[in-house]
Length: 167
Image (cartoon, rainbow, N blue to C red; front, side, top):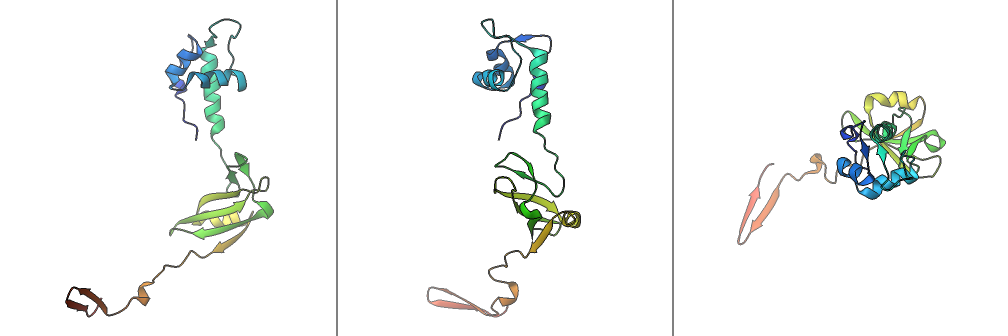
């Protein structure tokens, strides 16, 4: 996951070289150069060293921070394969209750076929079921339920045997 860059440390009325911008932001110098070459950060590349206006750098990073936030509808998922919000293939999803108030929705991405997961509240499930065909699955049962516990348990230590009559 990409780390958050503290773009508010950039002074808007100052000129920065890629090295100075990297020092202020706590990133590598090559990261700033990659922003200029590949991601469209405005800079004066005609001179050596390259110069970046503070207001341009701050606007570029501020826009990247806000663009990164993804607000999804209840019935859509974030696909890590596509790196975007997607709908479930066939409008189908599975729900597994994990706590008393929430659970996990699982679906397949309609674009790339990757499994997508989303934690949802139990109260939101009906609104999701209006848009998706949700199959509610039962959680895996415990290995030993409390009703199957033996009444008498024998513990042996060396030559002596202790019997516990009731639990």
